[in-house]
Length: 337
Ligand SMILES: [Zn+2]
Image (cartoon, rainbow, N blue to C red; front, side):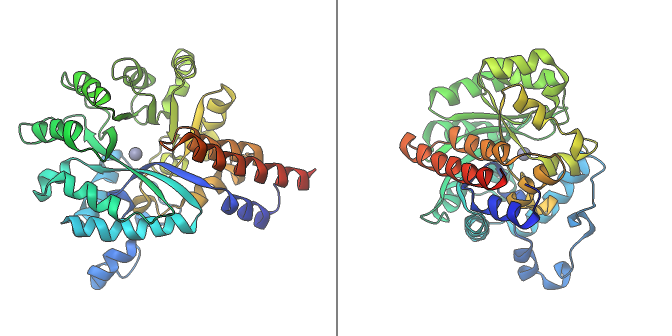
């Protein structure tokens, strides 16, 4: 795909998924601007294409500052989600997995289930949305612990849980049994691992927590043993190349291991992570793969298909999106030949 406009058109035409998206980190800038025009009239430097963060801590503190300026109630989650989902539809996204941060229940002193329902009720009919609870490695406090237990046991609309936050914090003793209980309650298990932490963290998430959906997992590329584990256990990596570049998880886009993972047969998907912080779109994530990493139409199609393969959709719905993707790829490849 050498023609830029043909590439763009092809990416746009593909039915797509987002399977790694933080709702607070997706806050549309225009909402901040609407709420406080004086403060947010101009775009800050961290939203520039060329901007790269110095550390995870810097990224996290900027994100939290901005998110707390908007999110203060279930209604604020509803309003933000409405706009976020509308942007997804414009990009031909059909299925979204998004998480909200469990810590917000404590910051805002509002019931988490109301946040969950606010996000779900903002989903338009043409978009399937699944909501996860994002839980930091040190979140099981006397305040949040009982709420987390309640979430997995009684929030029927909660799709799953996702381990979040600073990866240098150790996995605490409560985590393994909690992830196990969540699984027995029918929840999908995810974990952020191998982003700033070593390949060992990915192995720990797969073996100790029983996770088959790793968020990032970039540094699994440093261990042949861990890559083999991912393949053997059918683990999916929900990757976000622009996030990895801007947070300096990789040096250059060309160094990103997504191509190598795919060559190893490991299932990968592509998502945006935190568009508030990176000012990225899903479309741009795919474009970067073509422009900077030389991905072919077939590889791009494979990634889009993978998103549906791991989705929590009915098998016939999944298959129908996948066959549409195959048709679009065959079409673009026959034009190229
Ligand atoms: Zn993430």
